[in-house]
Image 1 (cartoon, rainbow, N blue to C red):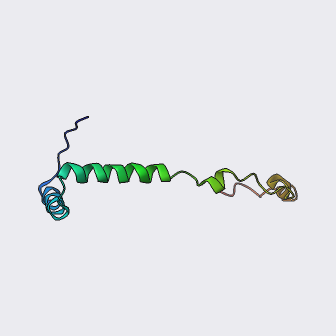
Image 2 (cartoon, one colour):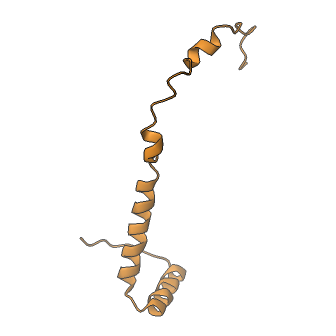
Image 3 (cartoon, one colour):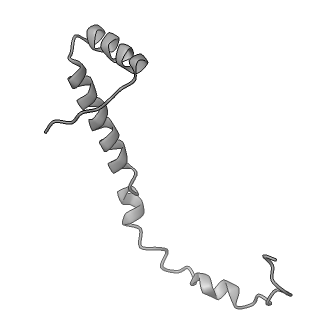
Length: 78
């Protein structure tokens, strides 16, 4: 698939210098940068250790800790 991307002169010059230093094409660098960006976005998900967590079996429900609280006087956010 082809895309047209317009890049300012300064970024273009930097891209060309990097491509020359690495001895690759500008397109190869852009593909690499895009792949890294997409990989980072995927890694933003929660890790498996968090997703697989099922709680602590002997811990009381959170709501139980609120039963003894008194209601605030007036609106606490006012």
